[in-house]
Image (cartoon, rainbow, N blue to C red; front, side, top):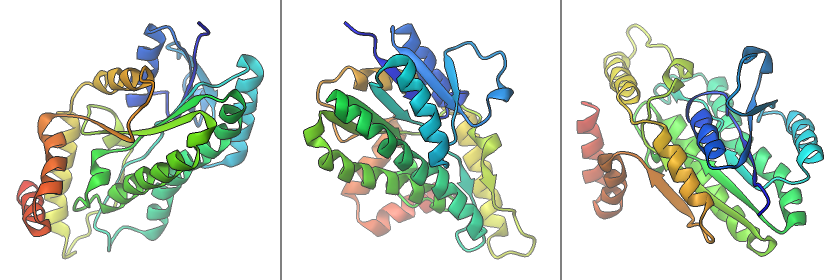
Length: 269
């Protein structure tokens, strides 16, 4: 059986690195991406390519090098993403656009770039790492929720459009995991005398505690491996704590205002 070739965006740290390391242990050949190779001179977990998901030219160059070397690409894991917090009103719009550029446009650029190769092969898997936050509008994380929710929806459409090509598309939504996302997240500043000042400060503390107390990102890696092995992946998968996954069931079952009240209570708003 031919060794599968995997490309993971945002593979140099966090969930991406965990996924890559786990897949290497399962015998797959893994390439990760980073925007700046110079930052990782001693990285040895798997191969790293310089690629910026926001830049189609950068994607083209990296993919060309990969295909020339390996002759194929079996699996794309769209993992690169950034966090963003703040009230919708007070988040600078340029930061909102940056978040969409990485979290939505980036995975879309990648999927569009790999499809011709996968179509030629008559096989391939595009697996998008989204977020449980993408299933609900979370206070002070509304922009992040929107980027991930939009990605889920566009990939639902692309999955149906490409079903005759032998290409499989699915999305995996993790809950909170202990990674470095909080340190790299854009925080809209807590503005003195802002009407959101007290509530946003409190919510920010809760969000950061959630990441710090999150699960082991290897759980996400193991779920990715489970999905890779499936002949017919589902449209959506979730991974996270019981309560995080149960919150999605409650959202389907409860009236909107009741569910909204649960969120307000959770964030002490």
